[in-house]
Length: 336
Image (cartoon, rainbow, N blue to C red; front, side, top):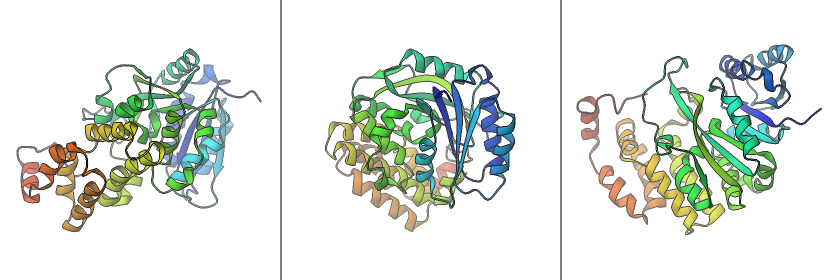
């Protein structure tokens, strides 16, 4: 069998209906590229009808669909690694099982891959939709909004300064599998972090992988459907970002490196903002708030932006945020 140029890799768990839609979004536009792509699904021991859905699609598809089912649920990070392991393509494109690829997205991506054979990591953009993927939403999407135009990064620090938080959203990541395989050594340390793939991508960058960001909004992102993060609750969700990026960056580049400083700057630009502090204050009880703020102090106290941009909002009493969320900022801070 000829090796495909691109493997579209979908890790999944108990999302049979949404997974079927995700795969159909590929099949509907990929007929002319049937010899160049494959679809790979790693099922984290789903208890719904995921397996029967895949078998049905395999019978109808002109594109090869590779299916693997774990014997037990191994956690999200293991599944992120496993789905790349079962792939055969020269490049891999992660796709969350509740997202879809916009019309013409595959053609655009294959063209970019062919035009840029020395690039190790491509990052695209996304369009935010409601939970049914029917209505586009006009929402602040900070990680992507700071990236307005195509950018090719010359150094790891330059890339980290702009795209760090984007590495946590798998559907926008397309990468050369050979460079991934060389960079994944030691990933086991970050199994359970929810960001094991970030570790590998940072290692790729450190080893010289070229990174390109392209502002193509070719991913349909289903807002408000992240059951994995919902299950972690407020403290767990916060820990992934506050602790995860810091620990991984420090391990790969060094705690006091210019790359680590670039990573932290990107976090302050995108996810560690006064809006996040307000959400924590509004949604959390006293114990949760204290736990989360202790993590902020532990990892970021030495950075000036922590004191100028976060700390002043951390000491504002909770009742003021609750009042503001119901009055002058109604619609901005909204309970999910």
